[in-house]
Image (cartoon, rainbow, N blue to C red; front, top):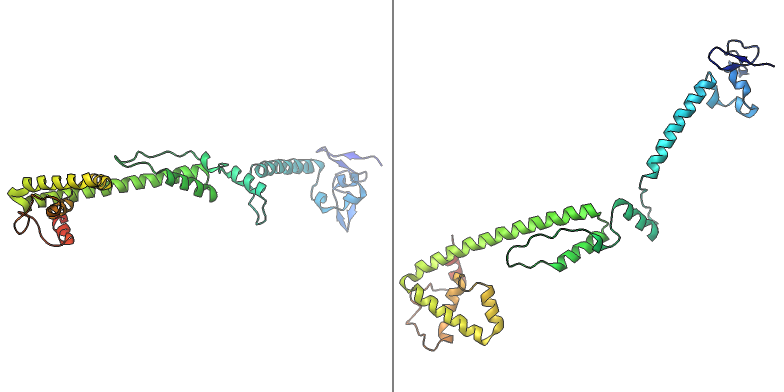
Length: 257
């Protein structure tokens, strides 16, 4: 039987000149072009929904485009790790999300440390190892490390400023307390400091590190122990103009602002 070409380019079986009178399927009239399909496909509902071959072709192209798009997304996607993932799968996953292959590969910016404070190499090493163990990406690690150091630096600056203010207030109170005896007492304190330092290098370093010349409580303490270090120092009763009481009481007196 010869086929008939419809006005839209589709083919209809002979006896169906309008392209719509094709084979019967359960009493329903199927599109004429269905007759050209193999027998095992003629009743497939996937095809019977298209009136012409052109509609089927357009649908196929649209579906192919979506499949290609999905394939591209899948190719660029990072699959979720399963509970039973192998070491190789884990390594591939972490590399895909941006975790360096080893802790030393993190690119971290070291902060500018406050004057007199050394950089903590051990802390950086700990951070690198912990970040890598936790699967932190290179970008995340950089942000965390920088933010932590910024906070720490500002905190240390704040503490240093507060200590400076406290010491200055304490020295002012000490000078007011000692009055005219201030210069003489300071001279005695320096002699005691030198005496202690001469007998113990660690103590000399400690006194220097703790700013013995600017800490009012430490200065008062050195004056209090002067009789034990200086044979020619024997104050009558108590140090001239000195603040008496326990070390804690002296600290409260000098450090109050």
